[in-house]
Length: 390
Image 1 (cartoon, helix red, strand yellow):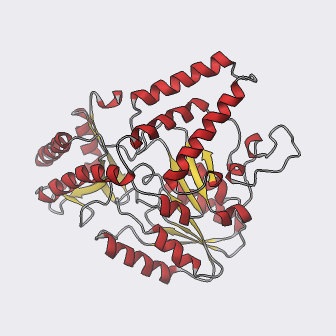
Image 2: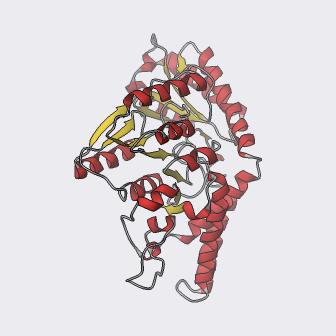
Image 3: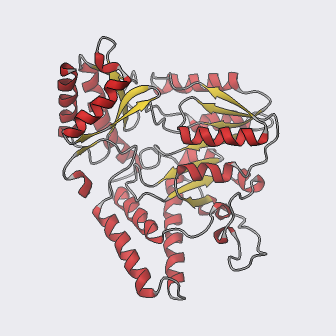
């Protein structure tokens, strides 16, 4: 990973560095396209094969059949394209957790305004205890928040701000008992490439992923898994030639499977790049093996923050994945949002990169497979030194 050669990197939750083999795969794909002819009979089988192979590789990652997967540009489009094609009615309620990314919330707000629907909040951001306690609290709060008008629940699999894991399968099971049954939209930006997903992706109606974060693939390519129920009731929103069952015929109907949510031309070399990144991750063991490596470094960071007189992690127990959010202790001037932004800049001058968040106000560091113990020690040392100077 060339991007890691001159820095200590803790921003995998924002974007993962591209491995050299993936960069080579992208370059080779460009060259192949040009050699065959970018719009020739010779290139079309290559393009079809490249897309199909990636779809087939992703299916076991998400635990759903390939026909339930649609390629998108990112998580936002993966959420919005299926969501806006569902049957909505005035007075419906959209129940959104208070830990969702602003992009998804904004899309839901606009959808509600257009259809005369109301928004409601599901509080989960304050759930910082162990997984068993969190699961019980989420389900209890959801049970209380659901009404006869609730038609959508929006809940991330791995919260981008606190690093807590949400019980998606259990939430889906609860929703199945309700009539009418609400749709379940899951932002999987932080879970794809870090957590086991097959149970959650299969349980959700919309499970939207991106390849450029924990999978260390190229930006501009994501995938969304949709449920059979959504395929039966949902309609495409943006329609292009890739949405059509017969792409050269204007009168053709849309695909019966998830491809109805694909629109038009995509950058084919990105598919080759993500394919390579996934293969590299698979070479590091099972998803459980990879998660264990991620957790080893996140636990080291969490324990170091716990022991620090200046910093404290948000989560009360060891992180379930690689997201570690933290703030200054109450007695420290490093606890303010302004200090967080200044801390990011000061660490950057030492070639150590993490990020600050606004809600809740904190710093966030992400550990991955390639994070070294020495790098975690370096981050902790610099954090303590800078706090003492604040």
